Amino acid sequence: MRIIIAGAGDIGFHLAKLLAYEEQDIVLIDIDEDKLKHAANNLDVATIKGTSTSYKILEEADVSNADLLISATSSEETNLTTAIIGKHLGAKKTVARIQNLEYLLNREKLDLRNLGIDEIISPESLAAKEIKRLLKDVAVTDTFDFDNGKLSLIGIIIDEGSVLKNKSLEETAHLNPQQDFITVAVLRNNTTIIPRGDTHFRVGDHAYFIAQPHGVDRLLGFAGKEKVDIKSIMVLGGSKVGFHTAKRLSRKFKVKLIEKDKEKCFHLADELPNVMVINGDGRDIELLNEEGLKDMDAFIAVTGNSETNIISCLAAKNIGVKKTISMVENIDYIHISQNIGVDTMINKKLISANFIFRYIRQGNVISLTSIHGVDAEVLEFIVKAGSKITEKEIKLLDFPKTAIIGGVIRKGEGLTPMGDFQFRPKDRAVVLCRPECIHIVEEFFK
Image (cartoon, rainbow, N blue to C red; front, side, top):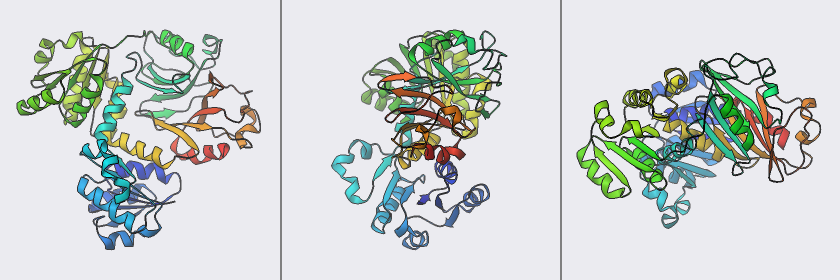
């Protein structure tokens, strides 16, 4: 595929990084020469300096032969214009990043496809959706359900009280007599480990499992965690992410939103009738305490300042709030969350890049998700008759070492596949793999 990406910022760079593993023909366009140099030095991509709304620049990028044109600059006008012009010049599919959610809410009325825009994405809306997903269970750092919970991906911090501490996967096998969960990844000191039998759990590890429903309950017990229902949530920051997060969550939870801009508070109060909007500075811990921070089940910090978000989450955690989520601008911050005490850090640009990556991979892959801070993707495949994965038992297949089959859904039932498991057509397979081997894994399911 020939893919043109307009914008070499965080979204464009991360997306190009994911796609570079696929050996795609990628062209990055940006007006910032330093960003292009950084991309060229770190990725196998072609770069063009200039504005993506220029006919000359798009022609130089060979847009007429592009399978996909993604416009992800910081300018909404540039993105929409680039997609429209690119489509008319021959790009097969176009994706535009937007900020104004009116486009998202009224996409059918606006008939964007007829204009030349096949897909629009809003980093703010995607971040709010991700936050809601992360609040499913306060006992885990990450969670994702497959087929309405037939299988679940969960992340747990290994602490001093865990029975898994300092034991290898082989040594903990007796804790899983029903074989209803499997360890698929361990995040340790910013390094992603695809575990094998001799991999040991260490205090501070973020361990990730794919489990059947009973397996989830047992894992929480091993980790010394217990399920806690979320009822009350405090959101810090009336940004677009804060607004959409509060709006989504207020349908189910009791939500308080703290915003320091008084005028914005009036607007938020009008737009969010089911949310208690409070005017105040979120850096004032005394204010947060007065507003009942210690009684909250979850605290979400989404101001425009990463440091404010992190520090306020640490303060919330310190007084006993069970679940904290911090939005950060620097992608590198996500890796330190396991070391400093914030349950989960998210980056809206990274979420957006992963969303576009899923959009590109539609076809063989029926779903794809990322784990925050983990250098791996979780993919779900439908097994086809005659595919390579059906030929032998798993242990006899030359399956890549940087990937692991975490679960199977067969006839509506979640299964945990061991070495003697053999796939059948129409099975749904859940696989975790490093980005560089996604295309190898896909070959097994074609």
